Amino acid sequence: MLHNLNSLMNKVSTKLLARKFPLPHESGETKEELQSETLDNNKDIVSIVSELMAEKESFLQLAMKLKYRRDAATNEELERLVKSLLPFLDGLEHVLKIARMHPPSPEVNNWLKTIESLYFRITNILEKHGLTAVESVGKPVDLNYHEVVEYIPSKESPDNTVIAERQKGYIFRGKVIRDAKVVVSYKEGSE
Image (tube, rainbow, N blue to C red; front, side, top):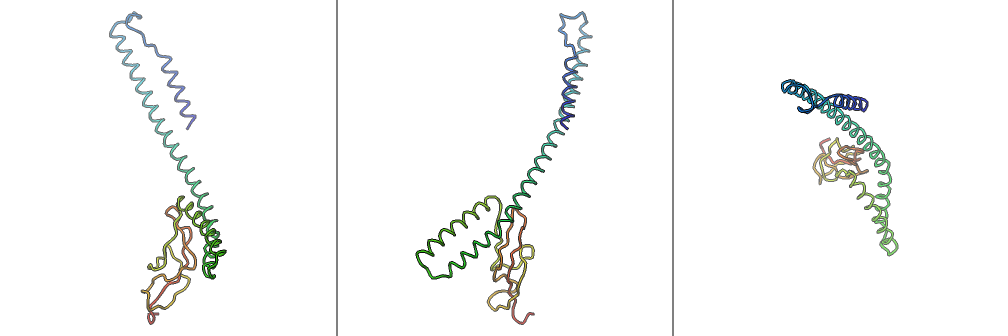
């Protein structure tokens, strides 16, 4: 593509430099001959400009394709990085859950605040880059986002409602990168 553009630019400059654009008083040509030559020159210039515009359009299309490919590659790399961080987030959530079960003490509370701060910083950074958690509990099961790991009879919850989450699911820039592993209710007697 760049070779074509360079070739066209050389052709244009050669054509333009080869042309003579005489002034009426400098040449011995008649007014009609000068008008005819000027008309021919104008047609050549229009043709050259048309070729340039077509090449410019081709060049812009190539630039857009390259940008799209670069963006796609960057998104794939970022998605792999985010996926590799999910177990780390799971671990932090697990530590926070266990820490909240211990009796409160100044040491545990201080430690818990530090871990929560780290957890929220990391999730905030990931959210800014396009990661969102799948909201599951209390919602109807949706197999596009949920992987059902257990069914439990329930009188309180409606049929096919997520009542617990074993593992969080995540969406990254509109794409599910991990299904939520969920526990779903069913009405007793509807087995």
